[in-house]
Image (cartoon, rainbow, N blue to C red; front, side):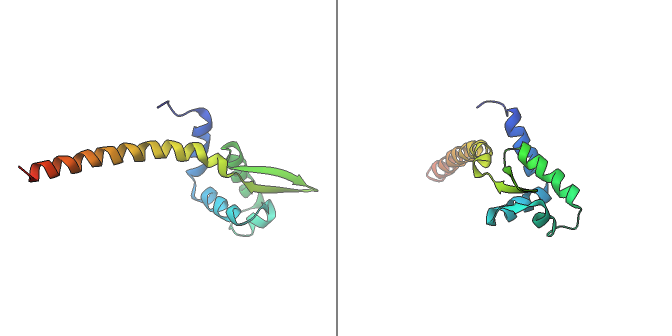
Length: 110
């Protein structure tokens, strides 16, 4: 397995913050403008915009202009690389735990 690349680091950085994870959950329901997203948080629009910038840099959202508004859209493929990286370790533990189970069963049969 390769080391974590810059893109994946940006994705994990974006996911590290609970506010950004909450924004992603809200965007999973529908696309939203900054103003719509800001209504759900006790922070300024500027603070929400900073979170959105980090999410966009992490490849987790895309932004498109709609007149004067910027519409934010969840990009599920942005999570794919992170999911694959995590899945590698899931397989690693499945293998290790399987070997441990076999060893315990063999020990009990002695």
